[in-house]
Amino acid sequence: MEVNYLCMCPSRAFPATRPCCGFRRRRSRVNLVRFRSVLVQVRTQRSEQLYQRALQHIAGGVNSPARSFDAVGGKHPIFMRRAQGAYFWDVDGNKYIDYLAAYGAIILGHAHPAVTEAIAKAAERGTVFGTPHEQEIAFVEQIKKAIPYLEKIRLVNSGTEAVMSAVRLARGVTRRNKIIKFAGCYHGHSDPMLLEAGSGPSQLNNAVSAGITPGVAQDVIVLPYNDPAALEQFLDELERLGGSGPDGDHDIAALLLEPIVGNFGLVEPRPGFLEAVHAAAAKLGALVIYDEVITAFRFRYGSAADALGFQPDITVLGKIIGGGLPIGAYGASAEIMDYVSPVGPVYQSGTFSGNPVSVAAGLACLQTLQEPGLYERLERFGKALADGLRESAARHGVAVQVNQRGGGVSIAFTEEPVYDVAAVDRSDKAMFARFFRRMLASGINLAPSVYEVLYVTAAHTEQDIEFTLNAIERVFATLHDGDD
Ligand code: PMP
Image (cartoon, rainbow, N blue to C red; front, side):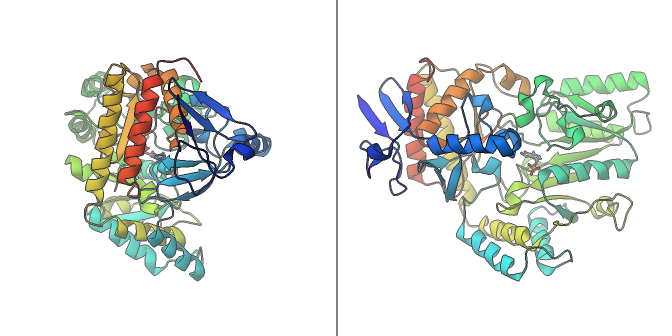
């Protein structure tokens, strides 16, 4: 029998065939994962202790529900101690190749030198001014060069804030109240956005958070993603009730969506869907808001909208543009953005908005992303992982759907193609949980939910991909076996 050990010492890279540096001696409590031909031992005792401590002081033991291991049957999340490049080291000394990439916020890899240097220099000059400063202009200019139809931008502190502000702006511009959103898209945790959201909220019963007032819910219309016929049917119904033209009494301010979804796996719009969304908006006299918190600068240096050949009225940004620090942004034509206070009547503010440290990190990240060949490499590695997942699955008779674009890859255990959140809801989640746990035990850190995406970063190497493909093959070979 082949025996693999996840070495406890940071000097050893990945599961080794021999233990080193007193691993055996220091081992006190070990999670034993028995595979048909592989034995992987991962000690997570310190993580477990920290989780017990966290549970006493932090709501649910985590500062974001997506971090809990509830959906993947883990007893406790893994507490990380350090991240560098493509790797994590946990508090028990285990090393992992990281594909969580902070839910997509990290694209250059952890602690990229250009970014950390920019952060350190900015911090020395002061972390928050509460006044305008020059670098926030340079940063926004940099974004505008990549997404030219954003004539003006406002910086905020998170994707949630940016979506919330963009929705308010759309309502202010159109003087209407209702928003159409699409089932499974996640747009942060402002009240209206928590209706039928993907990502974390999909774990809730009925996918609706408690605490949302009926008044809020009544202003949100949820339609299925990738379903132009459903949109058409909805417009017909509106027509019957009071008109679906720009002067009808439909009260619809905007259609909001992820142009490529990253919150029920990675799902691209099917031909005709975005056309239908834009046509509906034109008919209703409503605005189109693209939430590009995940997609902007993800697959190319710029927006997904540009890659897909569309131009929304309002664009929401976040994650990557902050270089790993908290940020969000929304932008549009000057005409629309001039509705924002202090020029216009739509109020939005923020103590930390445009703070020098996030802006410096973001600027360094965007500059580094322009390195020739970077996106091509992400695509190559993403494709290698997707192909490897499909091939291993086929070899071992496991039904999977693997979606991939650039460095983004998602996997759902189902026979049916994944075009909408319902397909992920119907997939074999117990199988995903097993896959997740066994990958983790093999030294691969994925997001602990089938609704999330695995992200290759610029820091991943050929060897990392090779190692991951080997782990995938080993894990798939045992996936039909009972639980660990
Ligand atoms: N929009 C999308 C598309 C997202 O994926 C997320 C976060 N996953 C958000 C908005 C919210 O961003 P944040 O977590 O920074 O508030």
